[in-house]
Length: 200
Image 1: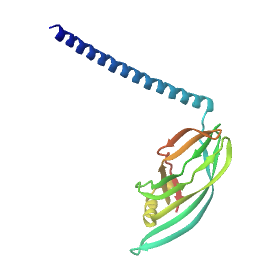
Image 2: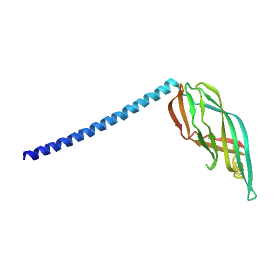
Image 3: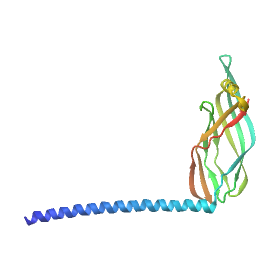
Image 4: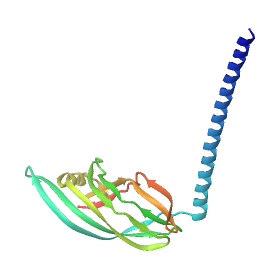
């Protein structure tokens, strides 16, 4: 009788220890995540208030048409394939440098949202307080239905008549550099699409 009561006491004690151990583990895990969130929040606040980040500015310097090919199908449908090189100037007003990893963006027709081309951006560095960083990108239009674009543009009314609008979407990887050390990696997702008008 004494042995069975001792065994039951021992089993109850083990269950109680397991329950306490599980609660203790959950508490420390929760405390760890809470401290990690607070630590990341402090880092973000320091970056925002001390560095006062601003948007880098990109401006078009030069545009050159490298190659193009026109194909006519069914007598009236015209397709264009072309490669365009854009020379861009990048200005970085921030206190830290920004290094961009190679990216690929899509150009979409604003009317129906179909992809019409691809923009390939090479990796490049924007030093802190730089205003004259030049780089080249390539825009590839593999097969654009020009007849459809002209027809859609002619149906526009008002000031947008005879204009074709497109938007640019994609992801760009940016890395913040301080003293040539990567501090933070940022992935800019879904770049703000903007209407780009092309007069026909």
